[in-house]
Image (cartoon, rainbow over all chains, first blue to last red; front, side, top):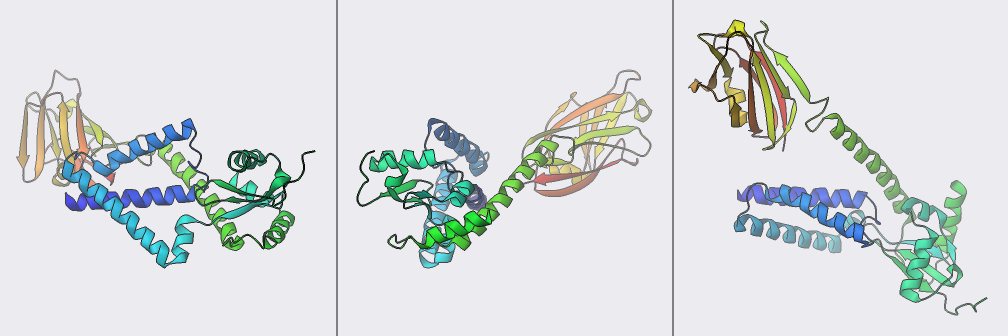
Amino acid sequence: MGVDAVLRAVAVYGALLVILRLSGKRTLSEMTTFNFVLLLIISEATQQALLGQDFSVTMAVLVILTLVALDRVSDALRYKFPRFDRISNSEPVLIVNHGEPLEEVMRREHISVEEILSAARETQGIGRLDQIKYAVLETSGGISVVPQEQPAEAQ
Amino acid sequence: MSISEKESSELLTRAEDLQLDQDLRFQRREWRIERVAWWLALLVIVAALAGLFSNGPLSNTSAASPSGDLRVDYQHFVRHLGQNSLSITVQPTAFHDGLATIVLDSSIAATLQITSILPQPQSMSSAGGSTVIQVATVGDAPAQVLIQYAAAGAGLHTGTISSGLDRHGADLWEFVYP
């Protein structure tokens, strides 16, 4: 049963890593109410595969231990091998440069100007695209905004 | 598209006072792989609807013995320890003393963890690894037996179900997903 617990955890960890990585940066990045519920459903579906019919404390501890260990190992691998970091985590990508939205990136990542403006309002309190110096889509899926050094006067 | 790629490449190189470790070639490859992955995911979902992972036109099947006295309706694709059922119909020509006999050969018997048999068999016995099930019959009506089971052991399993130890049976194959 011990082998079973470890193998199940490894399989589920790997499957989740591949699915979430390939679905793109933006998946589940915004915690809207719907995304939150979706996350709960995904964990519910995962739980069955992780534990099977065995609801013992031993099984739960073994699975948790394996998952935590896998996470530490992949962190260590990411630190040691930047290539692995890039493959498993992607990399940040510029989406606005000096007020100019980069159309290709936005199209590929399905980001609208609205979403960038929303991030600018929330994090920087600025209201116009030309007040944004840089906006970056982070690997977490969030949008970070660097404002122009001298904010333009209001029209 | 090539124009916007060129434009965005130029814009990206002008971000000189932003320390951003970004490789547009890698990024574009990533988008391509993502695109392929989305289509693959769609393909998996369609395959699931079609029954590649149990319950669907691809999975539902039936097998009959050469003499036609026994037919098995079952699923090609099942999942490890998932609840499945197979339905066995025995024709009156195979009845003996008011009993219908069903023989699961050793390889099938080993992979089926039987949870219930309907109707309740008169007897269940073992003959050299094979499981012999006998069900009471009424007159000349074909006997229909429903076996509910959990499939044990991932992989491809083949076996035979027959209406008697000395008879040719229906050959079936079943793939068990882990």
